[in-house]
Image 1 (cartoon, rainbow, N blue to C red):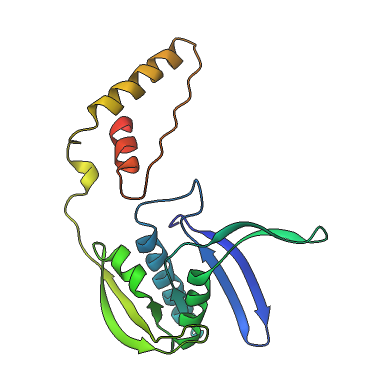
Image 2 (cartoon, helix red, strand yellow):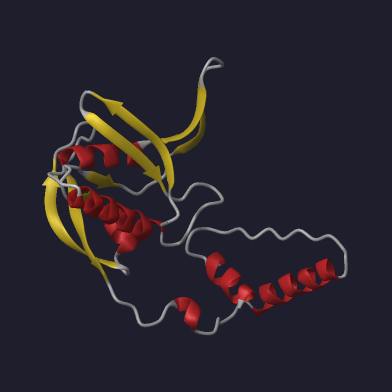
Length: 192
């Protein structure tokens, strides 16, 4: 519902764990941190409705995504500091959703947060700031509701290629750029 991928479900003597990921290559959204927090809040509410205990940790950062394992058993996953930090935040949680400062920073336009304080977590030399997301902020309009400024050259080039495609000629469009450069906004304008 929020655009994430269930990476794995693990059950052991400590309980059942779900690892979900947002922002995989070709599945990114500029608001992935907000989406992950909304999903986390939804999971927490669903557990509470069933009188079940559960904790959620969310962290934002880069990681390795790809195949890991051996020739006998290989699977696609994500590993790295953010994944480890999310697991540590989950372990430190006492039933609430905890996130790191990078997640708070990435989602600050969409949500409000309560500071939970710095916590010591295994594998991190310094205490880690933790936050709990509150209700989403209400937004009257989005960036996609107002006319785009600039990008006329790019829109013209893409429209020309679409016209070629409609005439039966093949065309490939590669849209790439750093996060926050406006790729999603440009695509939204083209759809409109």
